[in-house]
Image 1: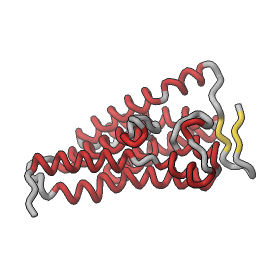
Image 2: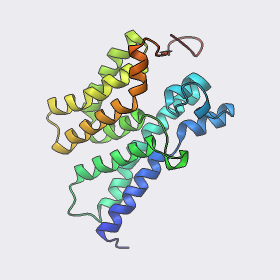
Image 3: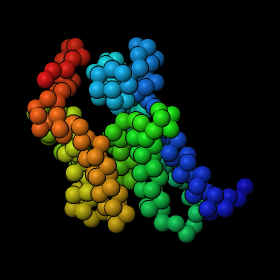
Image 4: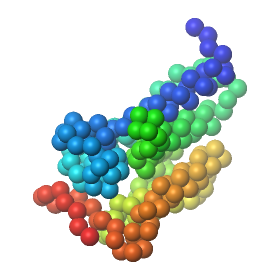
Length: 216
């Protein structure tokens, strides 16, 4: 079956958005403890809040599934529809669909256009289209998170590291632009965390302990 290029582009964009919109954190918390994650903890549907509210397994599942969403969009979805888009640059197309999936995660149609901060889905997208950029950025995340226990601070550092490492690693133009946009979105979505960090009111996340807990 032949699909016109314009229709293929629209269908792939909608598919990417819907996959990104899957409210993983809401579903895992509901399944495991019967709670609405939107009214617990920081009220964010991301993996960090799921971990704090529901425990390690739901938090880990949320993280993994949200990462997989990004990978699937820029590999399976992009590959399927790209055959109908011969005049579109493939790297641009992957980056565009990846960004669409991330925005779907942040502004989920299933959650009244609210969602997480998009970090996990960003990891999945970047793992598929710029793995070395991701490795450097994750290293920065670890360097910041391990001594501070602030997930938000690590995530902010991760976002800033994306465009810097993309430039340093001589990535294609579209990847650099993609990383710049991600950095801006990531910083904006962490604006409340930034305020709490400046006031020294941000919650620390303790991972390597016998019990799941958080402290200030």
